[in-house]
Length: 221
Image (cartoon, rainbow, N blue to C red; front, side, top):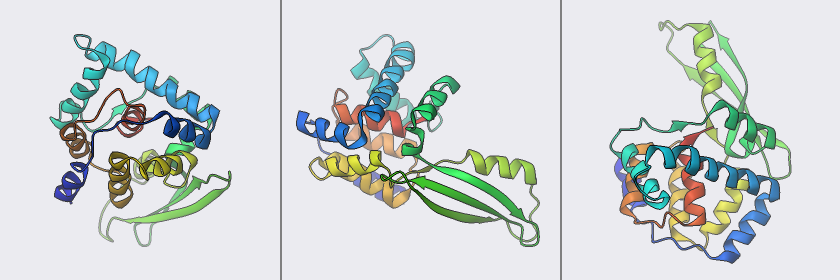
């Protein structure tokens, strides 16, 4: 699976988004979400990249950041500050990024944890889903801790305005098309493998969409 991931990511072409694509993307997600997304990029560049990689330009810092993920110097994704998480939750953009865990309950008889999720749709309604996690009849689990962990798990929202708008751009931009294809096929991709694909694809780190993919893929909110 990892091999397939790398092969697909290596198909990314040099990115160069045009202004019309940017305008249509921002129109699709709406002004409010567009501003929130720009805020996330600005925060990442000013409060993380500029501090962690102060010896290089912001453009080069993006690549060094991905190299550190690839080399496991950064464990998977970095965690956004609670203040930033609160801001995007208040803006409503959090539900564009993630499916929300609505409830978790435990069936002691089968030793199965049930998770109910809701996903925000472009029309403002929610798609209800869920899944079961079985630990085996003889396994021992700490009910409170396991339920807490399930609440902390994050799944992508593949149905919202953000992903739908990105998918539209992907019809014209091969590197975005391949990124979407990989992520939808595999769900939560391995950050180190994905970072390797980004680096080997020679992406333009000044590109509007590359910046937004990086901050929503490699930062946890």
